[in-house]
Length: 209
Image 1 (cartoon, rainbow, N blue to C red):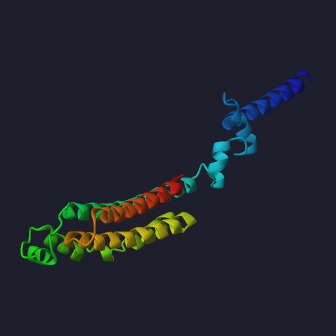
Image 2: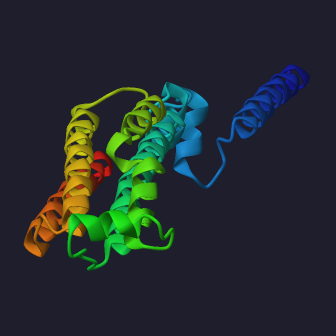
Image 3: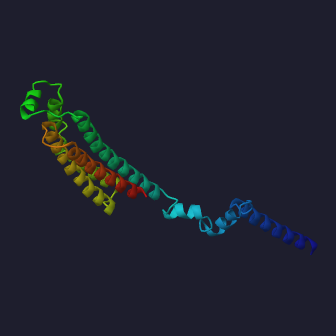
């Protein structure tokens, strides 16, 4: 009788040891209470693990979306800077040079270093009046952003205006050199371009805001 009770007790102890070993293997004795719940309920008790498993904010999708917006912004800002540089280059060439007459203006072309000749070359290359590279920029930004939200549409409209106002400035600058446009006319034309580009830059800020 005593022998049977001893065998029964040993069997019970063996079963308990097996159970304890199984719980330990599942992390049941870790200090972090989430590991106990994780052993019994999978990822449900760990928010970070659950988001990663579900492809939520803990996954790479959110980061990819942000990097796409950052790349799009970089492309658009580079385009705004390109047109800003075109205006600045033209202004440097023009300076404050007025020619006394049409004849004096025409005579200046015989001197390749004159503002008249330099501005004529500027109109040929880089040819700001025909520059529509902002359309290429918005296409690249759209691809990077994987879509074309309203902000990109607005940027395109504002840059189209900047392009046309830059063309008007070039024409005004040419008349300024010939003495048929005043300094105020030239300054007003430049201010329009600057304002257009500032608006386009603000559009980009909205994209990442």
